[in-house]
Length: 65
Image (cartoon, rainbow, N blue to C red; front, top):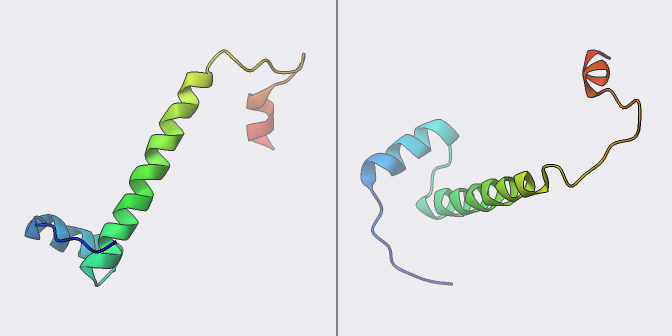
């Protein structure tokens, strides 16, 4: 989809330095991918308490392995 948008030059500069991505198009696409990933992850918190683990499941012990 083709569109025209006004971008904050300072944000574009910082994003270019941090990511190494050179084009504005690639920066915007990456920003959209990250936004979607973040928003999807947040929805996982809605599952809190909805999942029951097997008796004896010890996530701390698994972290030590």
